[in-house]
Length: 466
Image 1 (tube, helix red, strand yellow):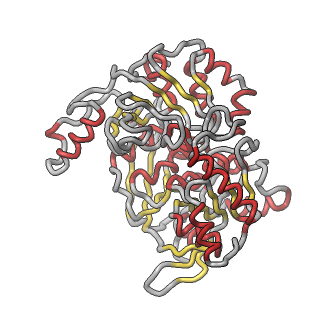
Image 2 (cartoon, one colour):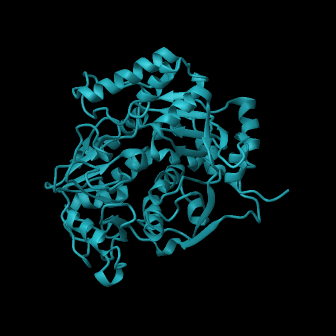
Image 3 (cartoon, one colour):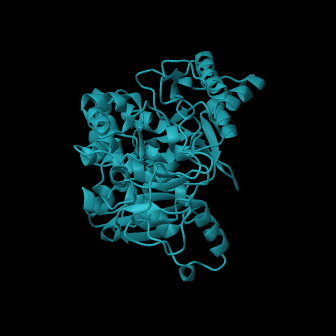
């Protein structure tokens, strides 16, 4: 048999029918939905007189619009309240499992799926959200879809999808002290640019990737979309199996043994061909920070923003426009730049490991008076664990503000907005103009780099501080 990539193995096993000269009818194991991209899909079903085909394969949780304070009270914002109420009504009507506001399993959809064991190796998962690629960390094929496709999956448990091309990105060696999974992924995106993986599904490989925890792997796969990829994935191994075993909805007993035997086959065969390959050395990566208005505009923290001579002349006008928005100049260094807000959270870095790293870094210290620091756990489970482990106490003693779970200031669809003109060091995934609020200026970074900024009040190298 011809050698297959990991992606081929999972993809091919889920093709129901190939359409000659067109896309495939592709089966979806798990459908994740939230309050923003599902209402129109349910309305479409009703208009056509259709029912949800397999409601047991769909999991719902509100996350984008929910407030991160006073969640026990009625949501004040009318649009947000209506969206959450509509999701609740649609789930009740269609017998779909809902982890509603204040449910012990509520949280960001891409945090909830893995921590509860809904996400498993070899699965296909979709959600009306671009960062669905997070789940690829388990050796799953996971990708974001549009609202019309959400309707299609609800109606048929399938989707029409052309098969993407395949890319492998290998990162070999060991990451330096103070360098995290977030730095690794920001480095790769800076190398390839925001369109460098367009049309591809990416497999991440190499010793540096293998050494990452599951939380770190989720961070890497989460941001695959930021370089244009359809999704990202990492072959499951013992780290994966140890993480999944014993979780609420993971297989148990003999079912676990059978699943494990299948999961161990989920790896790229020797000699399997990729359409494109890149290889990087972990030793070249330092703590990263973005300086512009897309995730590809990133530099090592000791480096400088490119000078005019280092920018493609055709891209210089848009490059300068981006710097103008950020209030930076060509050739500037970021070290020492003032920071007003620090946000640690989102589906990229809102997991328990991220809060542990943050608490470990700031323990016994105090944040700068000039910095507002919001720490937003990715789920009620993370929040509960952070309290039990004493992390919340450490962070609050350091002056950080613990909020309740939700997407929060990642995309400012609720009240958590960075004021216009203010600088935010954020552990989220996007730094577009206005992403964290109209006029907000966002620098993407790891929780460790965010901690350094919060303590000093300026952009600082975490390797020198912690």
